[in-house]
Image (cartoon, rainbow, N blue to C red; front, side):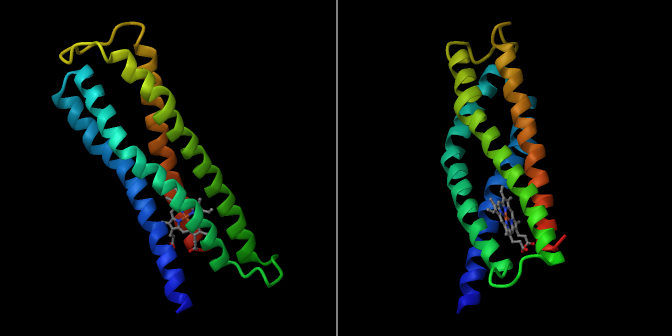
Length: 171
Ligand code: HEM
């Protein structure tokens, strides 16, 4: 019975990871390139803002789920009643620390994307015509920052997956 509970916790953890990271990657690899090819810049940013807003509650739900199920996973893989200084535990602690730093980095980047640069860019382009394909000079830096944060989110997402796989392998 207890194994079924651990299985469910691990399954929910991986589901939240797939939904968040997979969603980020689908946006970056499919939706953004498709919009780039087919829509003028302003319309593309407006649509991406709407898509982003729809995805936001799902993302923050996944962040909370990952944190709680991640903490539960730690209790499943480490036996805290035994002495904690063997090679497996040392490896787990090292990789887990890296994973947590990456997780916090991704949460901060996602927060900047959702609550700082995203709303600023959306407000700046609100009154522009959809058909415009080049942003006015004063809006370009916000757009640039938004692109940089989005790219960093993609890279950190992939690195977290690497850390997760390493953790699963006891590396
Ligand atoms: C974006 C964030 C995260 C992603 C994408 C992610 C992904 C994953 C995946 C795919 C696994 C399964 C690995 C396997 O069994 O082979 C896993 C396991 C695990 N995760 Fe996460 N995770 C995230 C956040 C967290 C957090 C915040 C914690 C800790 C607080 C955590 C702790 C763990 C632990 C302890 C395991 C078990 C590793 C093992 O099987 O040895 N994860 N994670």
